[in-house]
Image (cartoon, rainbow, N blue to C red; front, top):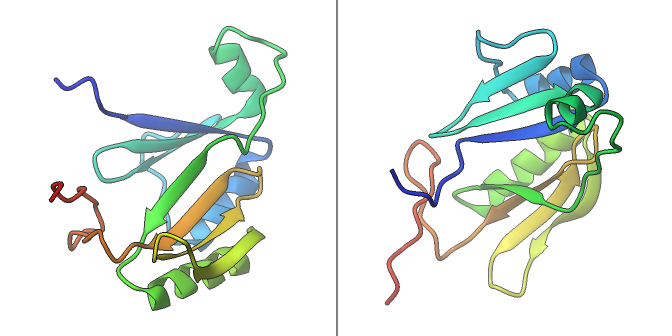
Length: 144
């Protein structure tokens, strides 16, 4: 098994119902194994989890710790700029906080940033140098 992998990303949330409603508005469907204190979303080869902040701190062995957000960015790549714009609008309609609207960027792509209700930052982007599979998954191209 390769050590270079991620199987689960867990986001600490302050209000599970609010967070679930936000992701539902984006079209995400919780996995049946979800529980009241943790919600799972099956993704391509990994799982995204939502976990109450205090429960997450306790699970980490740090009860009472103040957990932060914003030091990492989650990203979704799209097949073109129009799809980025549509994802941006869907996020705003779902209640996202706009951070930087989609725009042309220095690496010749197109991207923007928003934060979910708990401040977790998402980038939405089109990279003209990366091809997405039909299912939306990304494999980096071989070096020239």
